[in-house]
Image 1: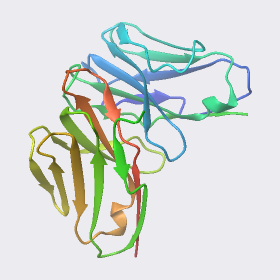
Image 2: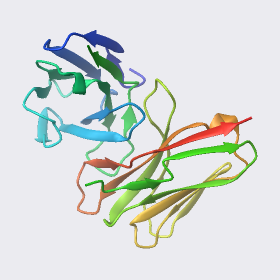
Image 3: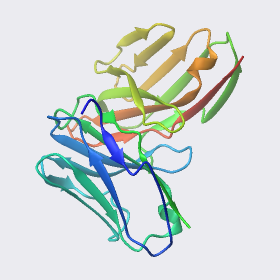
Image 4: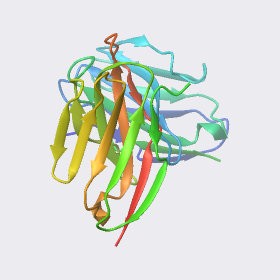
Length: 114
Length: 112
């Protein structure tokens, strides 16, 4: 596609439920990033993929968070047993190579845990 | 520990005024980028600076990368209401990691 596409754009879920957030990067981009942004705040790095591999998962807040990428393209961020503090915008971004290049963001998935 | 500190955090000014936003770190970055984010959207890249001392201009916006590549500034001349948004700086560490470190953000509101 023309840009990074994320779904759902908005998700309201009950505490304790699992959620999956999807990211379709720009075609041909090998690097894919997940960030989290709390209301009005800066971006918190979660995880980075180079192809299907995730060399750095250090940003994932807890073991309730996991992510995978298949076919060097689509990525899914899964949050298990959601908590209210998980409420945030989850932003996906992609870039052509792993560092030093422009990264392009999607519009984000707004997650609200009630 | 926040690697990139931005100041001010919030700024509300009148149309036509000038302003400067700062992005500071104790770490050296191989490149630094500035983004603007509007409500409900992802950040959009404004500029990338890679050389210490580099100055780039984008219409009324002037970006500068510090000589030591530890800091950067964004200056807006004659601010317009359309400049309203969240401004974020982001850097790639000199070690060549892939991890883009984002600043704390500056929320700018330009009043007509």
